[in-house]
Image 1 (cartoon, rainbow, N blue to C red):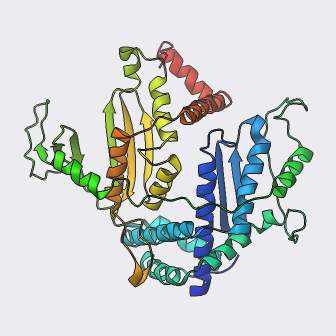
Image 2: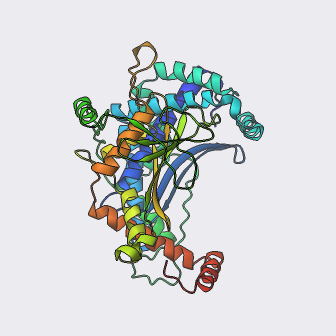
Image 3: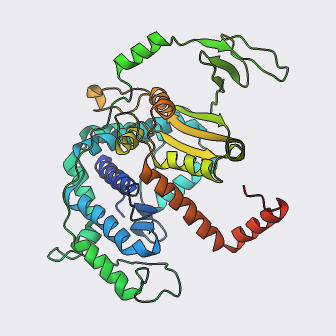
Length: 434
């Protein structure tokens, strides 16, 4: 472990976080390709007080017959980062994200529970770091990022990935353990692609480290999904207006300019009902839920195949191409603006949940040279608009959706507790197909 006790060591830790963020996004984007090698992958580096050292870990799950491909793909991405580093676009993107994270944490500093503060304090002291309050951490983050260079980030990336890059023939070897653990199906014959033993696992790791890699190409990420001229014409054609809230349960209607508690209930000019509530415990954070009536219950009423609504909702989650933008560009737009999107299907409705910052995000530059991006609220509204009017259905997203449900079902059958719950539910609902 390297103690974080001054500005230099703190800047190096931020360089590692930028490199880790770049690698994780690359792996996530690769996991959403037409034929993904893995269903889950995560690379991380943590200071472990229990082990008394810094631990790098690569965790992944894959279809049994694709385990070799998953190892090759993930190791190639790690080697690519270690050899060529990050692009300038990635450097600006993830450094800006660190700055926004620090700002939000500082805004919530007086609302962190005592238990969380104590746990963080104990971990910091055990690892030999200097303890800082959220406000102090934000100030130091701003100072460190203002002088952080891409060379420092690339050096940190080379150090993070050295245990993988050193396994290539001709590279300088490193001392220290490299531990690989594989969990595979039982009873697989040796001629089956899913077969894995110690020898084949070591060979797959070695072969994966011999693959030549090319530098990452920078992706052009849109600053905004909706150009100013298009927004202006839309507002001219459909002037925004608030309408009062109307209710069918006897509740008195509310005026469009009235703020009520705990919820302010209104309607947009197009009839969409809106409910807004203020939460003082979520500084600079917002949560938006878009609810469309229907859900699994609509499958029988509309004559759809069983499970089609759930698969469709999951396909939307796995996809993400809007208008002229590709799925990768939209994903990176969400990363730039710290947006989290989750689409689910229940018995009664399809829900789209968003978590977003309310301050300016997607900024470029630091200090006096900073150029503010749009607010997180505006960016999430752009995503909502594109989901409603410009969403593109993709065949590969449908394949990943079906694969996800198949994996979930297989996992369910292998867990005694989950299978028991399933059997009880079947008995209680008279084997209802839903």
